[in-house]
Length: 97
Image (tube, rainbow, N blue to C red; front, side):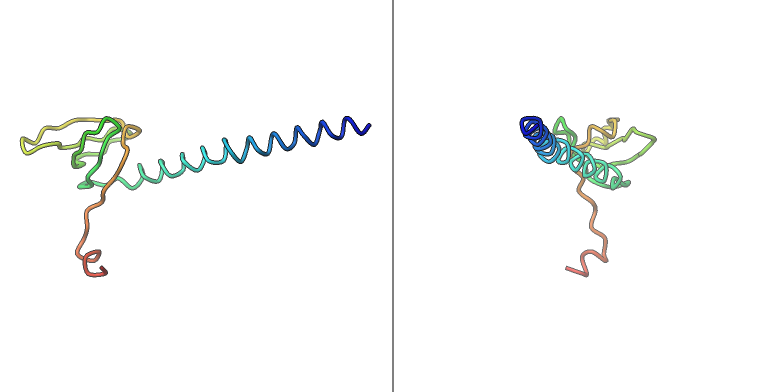
């Protein structure tokens, strides 16, 4: 009987370690990425996972069109391809600093 209790305790410990070291951080990371994608607005400066930097000019469903150069080159990406979003500073943001 004591052998079974020990095995069950070890299994519970392994499951808890697996949850706290792998599953929970992954869910947290996914939530942060979703918040980042939800924060994209027209005029935001973004960086894609490929390293392309541009300004958002159109948002349609899960596609985002960015303008990448002085020549006004337009490139369309899926929203999952966005790595970083830099929001434009408004006058209120500048005044609070």
